[in-house]
Amino acid sequence: MLFSTSLSRRQFLSTGSSLLLAGAGQACHFSDSPVAFFLIGDTHVLASEENPSKIDERSRTVIERLIDTLNKLPETEISESAGGGRVLSPQGVLHAGDCIDSGDKPKVPMQQTEWGGYLDMFGTTGSDGLLRFPLFDVHGNHDSPRGDGYATSQMRERNRRRSGLINVSASGLQYSFDWGPLHVVCLGIVVGEVSEPSRTRRYSPHGSLDFLVADLKEHVSNSGRPVLLMHHIDVLRYSTTDPIDDVTARQREWDPADVQGYYQALQPYTIAGVLYGHTHGRNVFRWNGTKTPAPEGIPTFNVDNSSHFAGTQQAFFYMEVHGDRVIAREYGTKDAWVTGAWTGQVWSFPLRRPQPA
Image (cartoon, rainbow, N blue to C red; front, side, top):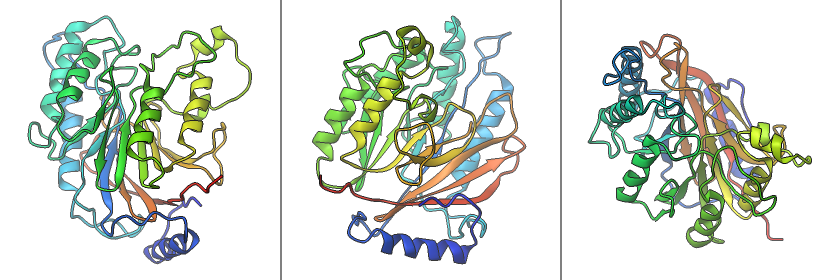
């Protein structure tokens, strides 16, 4: 059940109780302490066209305001319209890609400046930049569509040096880690590819589907522990089983055959959420492998752009994974993070273990 309209605090607390009862025998009770985190995306760090060695001031300003907002939000009150309570100290910040802006263009000096600015502002560990929490990111099409650009080369090296990871792919662009009982898998731009049909993909998956299958088998297995998946490209537009020719498939950002392979790979597991960005708009729904949001399926969270230099309306998610449910709230701005507020909605999904076949 998805609750995507505004709820009062009393309604929200009542909903939480009903979810626990509804999930009896299926909910995942691993810890009394929820895992909290922020989900951001599409920060698009931009270098100046006139002086590629400098970060564009529009970009720097909105990103620094975003980071200041993230840093100050923990332990503050959540509005009644967003369910009430307080923001917990987050385990970290997940970034759903398009970290920089020029990685899809032949502008290497700008890419170098943008990546350097990204690291200076966001850091990695929570103590090496302006952000006070560990950052975990994936690459998007503006970082490098094929995963062979400057930013992705830096991501590879950084992922191989990160502390606390339990698995890193051969490509260096996928990795996984644990936040207590929660298993998190970062999958890059898209997830793929299946063996058939054999054709060129527009965005290279870099073996992310094989990595995911092996990672879940080794680190989750039949434990029922909750799993988060993060990539950049959205799923609904490409969730079709209709026949598609190779030319049309190449024009799509995500091969529909790979999307179906991804969906099937998740079926044996308790998926707390599929997370992505790319669309520059918020969307929360259940995904059942089709192009239409469903009453039952995998909780899916499409985060808005969080600090794009060209706009004033931005947002991110604050999320909690409990033993029996996942809860998401959105915090947004209409003035490029001069001010910010809860957008007055709360989404809550029960965690359900797959039933034995």
